[in-house]
Amino acid sequence: MSEYLYPINDILFSLRSVAKTQRLTPYIEDALDDDLLEAILGEAGKLAEQVIAPINASGDKQGSRVENGEVIEATGFKEAFKAYSEGGWIGLSGDPEYGGQGLPSCVATAVNEGVQSANLSFSLCPLLSLGAIEAISLHASDELKQQFLPKMLAGEWAGTMNLTEPTAGSDLAAIACKALPDGDVFRIKGQKIFITWGDHQMSDNIIHLVLARLPDAPEGVKGISLFIVPKFLLDDQGKPSERNDVHVVSVEHKMGIHASPTCVMSFGDNAGAVGYLVGNKNEGIKAMFTMMNNARQGVGLQGLAISERAYQQALEYAKERKQGLNAERTERAAIIEHPDVLRMLMMMKSQIDAMRSLIYVAAVENDLSHVATGEQKAQSAARTALYTPIVKGWITEQAQEVTSLAIQIHGGMGFIEETGVAQHARDARILPIYEGTNGIQAIDLIGRKLHSDNGAAMNALLLEIDNEIAQWRQFGLNEYADKVSVVLEQSKSATELCLAAMSKNAVLGTGLAYPYMMLMGYLIGAWLQVRALHAAKTESNFNEEQQDSWAHSVSFYCDHVLPRSLAYLYEIKFGQPTVDKLNKNVFNR
Image (cartoon, rainbow, N blue to C red; front, side, top):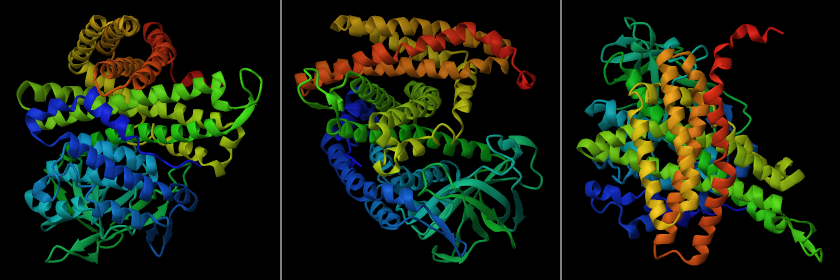
């Protein structure tokens, strides 16, 4: 079982040279000073490596449990959360007015990569808190912000999202949880399921954000409101006091992320849980999407993080494990000398490189959507919306392959729990499912993002890639330019086909959604891989060995990963009629 090493150099390179954090400078002044950034990430790496990673395997084995109506988390988690909170990490990108540090969210993303690689189960608690913090920041009244944000940004209080119900999963229109007016507050009654870190002992209070319906609410998603429901009500000094009418019923027994309690939560078994309205009545869906979009980018980051952890362990094992003879057949060889193991390792590494580039490009674009002005703000908002389903969907699909390859490299030992590598695959399996399944991400991409603006945002992205390919040719990267250009032209054609299909029938057209999302993911991955190579070859701080390392990764990606786009293009070009003919009756056999 290998130790985790925070890949600070790769992260810094992705931020500076691929995501181009200098684009933020006109709006944030000195917030991204190179020395400050390195210092922050250096300390974040120590926290991930020394405090959070060591309790990953033990947490997986121990899990969480319910005792006397309270969730008891795995040993060591409370102490790790205290260290995380006291370090100020959760408030890194928070509003300074409420105690945050006001740094760009891309810096928080870089910190969170380490936390998530170190211990995915642990990282879900602050991830949900960050989503709740953003929703309160953007939608709550000033009074509620003053009451809740300072303690949440300090890490003294945690946050959750309570959306899903037994009869309302991704279909939020079916939500039945009720909110009954009671003076200045509301009484929440209902049950929520799949609530990540819905209860624990790591913080002094837990601030639940709950979707519910008012008595006079219209049907469907237009009748959903959002409420703050604290575990403990606040006294006159704003301190936790009386227990609210909310409690955990049980925790789920899951395939992975064992140390993250996934709770069934009951609200209002007695008088009703006291809740405070966030934003306007019947407009909870707006705040919900704030939380969901924050979480969706976060889940994409989890895909990268768990892949990095699995890769590090597989690489170390491949260097140590001896099996068979070397090429000269003179002595036993470490399996890293065998071509097929080299192939698997580079399949992992090249995809991780592409995934990381996309994560930080999307993070910087998201920052620009908040801090920029005028046309740049609008362009970045559109680009962020476009990236979000690809970040969540495509990256988490790659994580399934990468974590599976880590097991394969370990051979039979990978199938044995004691080596620890199987945990990464089990943990990764939830990523394409929660915060909107990847099928929903694909539909979001082809529907809300492509069809709604008739391809304007996507065509702007394709034009940017086209222009950058021309720059590569001027620099002499013709081999890579040719390979990416072929897929780019195919992607333009696929985009037109998808637009036509959606215009003809917006329901049947979504049959093309998944292959389109995957096609765009592979194209963007290749684009950013070559951008990284271009940067490595042009920046003076890269030596020849580092340039060669990037060249190997990019060459492998273009030759072994990018061709997968051809299969998805074929699906889009020729597969629509067979999807159109499908219905539930074809499975009656």
